Length: 146
Image (cartoon, rainbow, N blue to C red; front, side, top):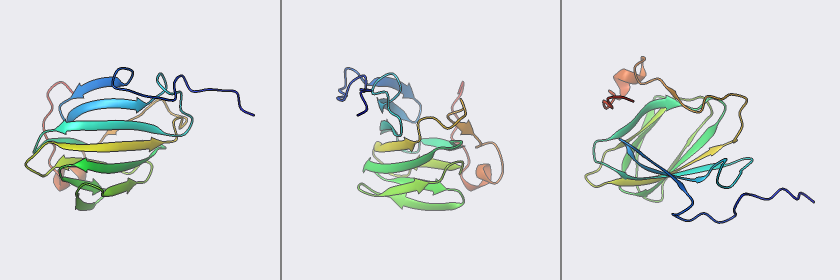
């Protein structure tokens, strides 16, 4: 029997970690200092403005699911793209560059589910939007200071 308990099994707006970035408000719902997960991290991104993007990046050693809750996004996974609507998702293999772009006219909301929690690297996200072929596939949305 494993007696290790999460810090809390329940996450509310009050105990989620919030961060505002140009591509939306982030609510970290399953994270080291919240639930003490071993396998899965969960981030809800809401209020992504029309035309905004989380430019091409990748996560070393972590797979990711992007599940659209509201709006529509153009999701690139490597060199493939598809418009995703509510209830649709993309699977992103570990280390593969991807970008999420709000291609609709209303704010978008999506869930990002990543795992494993530990991948042997302290690096969580590596930006590659300034490199080819990524910068030609989806020209980056400028985010001064980021």
